[in-house]
Amino acid sequence: MYAILDIETTGGKYNEEGITEIAIYKFDGHKIVDQFISLLNPEKEIQPFVVNLTGINSKMLKNAPKFYEVAKRIIEITENCIIVAHNAQFDNRILRTEFNRLGYDYKRKSLCTVELSKELIPGQPSYNLGKLTKSLGIPMSNRHRASGDALATVELFKILLAKDSEKKIIQDSITQEPKYQMEPNLKHIIEDLPSVTGVYYIHDEQGRIIYIGKSKNIKNRINQHFTNNSRKSKKIQNQVAAVTFEKTGSELIALLKESEEIKKNKPIHNRALRRTIFTHALYCFEDHHGYLNLTVEKVDPDKKPITTFNNRQSSKSFMFKAVDEFNLCQKLSGLYRSSSSCFNYKLNECKGACLQEEPSDYYNERVNELIDKYSYRSKSMLIIDKGREIDEKSVVLIKNGIFQGMGYFKLNHQLNNPEILESLITPMENTRDAQHIIQNQLRKNKKLKITELNPT
Image (cartoon, rainbow, N blue to C red; front, side):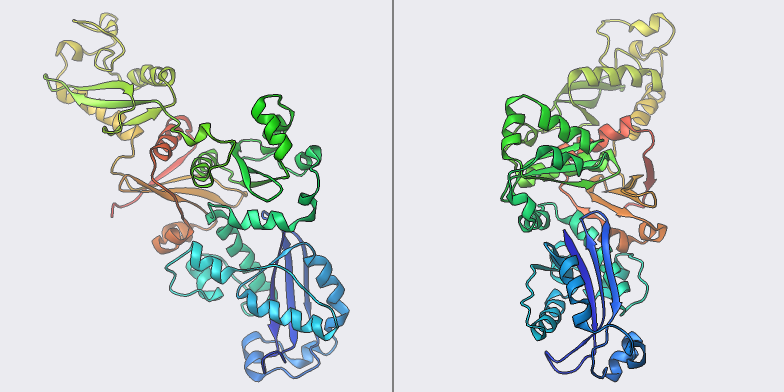
């Protein structure tokens, strides 16, 4: 649990500042679950430059509560939370100074979104909150007011959580939660989980990730883990202390994140998924008559496939559909062995490429249509799918045939501005598994929207 906050002060000498406004949003990693926003009477003058910056003046604060009147609420809303702020060192210092004046030792672990942004979103021209949110396309209102700045920090923190593929932020937060230090109640863990599409992380009592999975219904999938009697499930049940999750909205995003994060985090119970997830691939070659032939073979690392398959059966199923869709020859597609014509030719459903009756140029044009549809080789494009919320979309970026990464956007200008889009994208490895996942989803999911980009 996180307490994302922003504080406005009077300005003045170091450790003599007073708080004029505070906003705290309690954030569970997915949504805001509580909030506290208030002007405060600092019982001292506000520096003129601060009045000009924030618009807060002494007259506005005359009847506002003093810090000691809201101190209990601040303690309660931040209890067992990690403080998150843009320049957390400043906000933490101000809070601790105020509590010290009351004789209370206020201690909370903190995260600074400036430092996290420098690590997870490198290369930004500025890490000032206003300029950073603008470069990321995050809408911002009431700049230099506590609520506006804190809400912008919430949106920024969501991006940082998505970009943290090693899950360092989440693992640290688990060790802060007292309930995770007790013997876990599996039923209680399940009750707290949503029935959504996403990636889930099973942690031990030290916060370490012991298993990563993806599901269209996280709650049901965790229930299966906790009720299954298999050897692996029993081990997970004995070791689990917490389950965290990341909503993706899109199955494609969930598959890509699961594959990448298993390879990065190497959970002890994910040994099988560390290996390559596909076995067969579709290749193309030109025969001595000038016709393009298609063949499915076991994956050859030295060859570039058109697309890949989990097993031979799925490749066969795909090829039969492709022959019908593009009116191809069964023999030249590797589905019918014959020294003469293919079976479809006898049914007048093949135009005779198997006997060189159809001109190779005409036939090859249809083969190239198949290749163009099911391979993103040399293409630059965006694959757009459902997001985590109704007003959001997910996006996968392909540049010159290379998978770059994924991200989320809410506004069209974020997608149409290349600089903002690059900032929103979480970079990911262009592995063979990632290529397979994308090609497989392009074949299966007809609802995916493809937007082609100008190659760079």
